[in-house]
Image 1 (cartoon, rainbow, N blue to C red):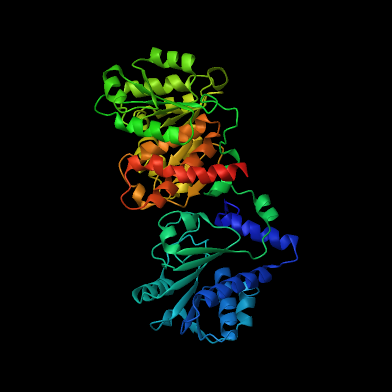
Image 2: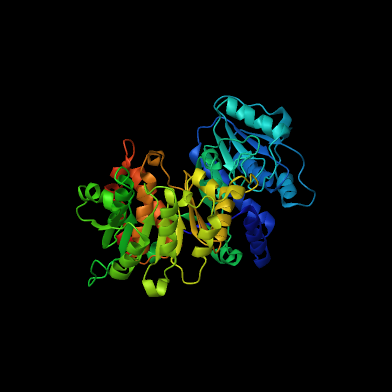
Length: 505
C-alpha cells in the first residue's frame, strides 16, 4: 500500500494530469468517484430507511449527484438537497443534469430518525469557515445523531490542516480518492472522519509519482527497506553503540528508560553516561546496560575517542542549563566521518536548555558532516525553540514541523496524538497509529531511546525517527489500558519481531 499524502493542491494536480493523459476526462473521474461512494453506502448501510444526499455547488457536489442517482437506481429512497447551482458547463453541472431526482434547497433540510446522510457539500479544498445552510445541516445531523458518510472529507474540515473551520460533520465513514489528505490524519480532523476508505478511481501511481508529494502516512512501507536486520557474522559493536546521558542522583530513571529502549530496539551496546554522584544509583538498576562516569566535556571527548558510540540521547532527566548545552554542542562538533557519531537525539531538558540560544544549536547542526540532530519536542517544548512558528495559526502542524526542521537543520518529531516527523529537506510523515495509553510519564524517554537505537544501527535519521514513532505507538496500542512507561520496552518485542521478519522477506 502506498504511503503518500496529497494536499488539496496536489490532488487537483493529480486530477489534471490524469485528464491530460487520457482516456479519462473530468466527468468520468466524477462518475467513478460517485460509483465508489454509492458502492460503500450500499454495502455498509443496507438497512437505511432513507438516504439524504447533501450537494454543494462544486465538484464535491457533483460526486453527490452521481451518488444520489445511483442509489435511487438501486431502489434506495433518496432525498436530494442542494446548496447553490453548479457552474454552467462544469462536470458538476453535467452530473446534476444526469440526476433526475427532485432537488430541495439545503436551507430546508430535514431528516428522520434512522436515516443516513451523505455529505457532498464541500471537499478537501475548503478554506473558509462553514456557514449558512451548510452549517445548519451540520447542526441538524449532529443534533439527531445521524450517521454520516462524507465524500473526500467531512464538510468543514480542512484537507490541508485538519482544522475544523467553524463547524463540521462528524462522519462515521469517509470515502476519499487516490490517496489520503493531511486533514484525514491531523487532529481534530482525524476524529471527524471516522473510518477512512481510499477508493481507486483511475489515478495511476505514475501520476502520483509525477506530482511528487513530500508528505506521507507513517507506516512501515515508508521505512522498512532501511530497517536493521543483523547479519549472521555480526557482533555487538557492529549493531551500534548508543550512549544516554543521565541526570543527577534524584533524576536517573528517565535516562535508564531511554537506555533500555535503545537496547530493545536492537543497539548492540548501550551505555548510561552518569555524573559521579549518580553512579551508585544507576549501578543498582543496570545489568546488561553499561555505565560510565561523565562529568565534564573532556569525559565526552574521551568517550567518543575510546568507545566510538554511534548515537547519543541527551535530555531525559538531565537538567536544564549550561551543562546540557555544552554536552550537546560537544557531540555535534564531531565529524561524522572521523568520529563515527551518527547522530544525537535531543529531548526534554536538552531542548529547553537552548530556549534563549536556539541559533547556536541550529548552526551546530547545520555544519557540514555534523552528526544528525533529531529533536523530539512536545507542544510546549516546540514553542520554546520556535515561538513564532508555534504561534502562527495560519500554519498546520505539518507546516510547522517542516519549517522547524528547515530552520534547525534537524529532524523534528513534533509529538502528540498526531505526531509529525519532518526532515530538513521537506519530507514529512504524519503518524496515524497513536494511542491514548501513551500519555504517561516517561513515554517520551522511551521514544528517544528507540530513535537512538535505530540510528546507531545505521538507519538514516528521518527513517529512524519515523520507525521509532510507529513502533512506540504500536506497542502502546497493543498493550492498551494500564500501560506505564516501564512496560513499553518489553511491549515492543512482538512488534520488532514482526518488522524484522518483514525486513528480510
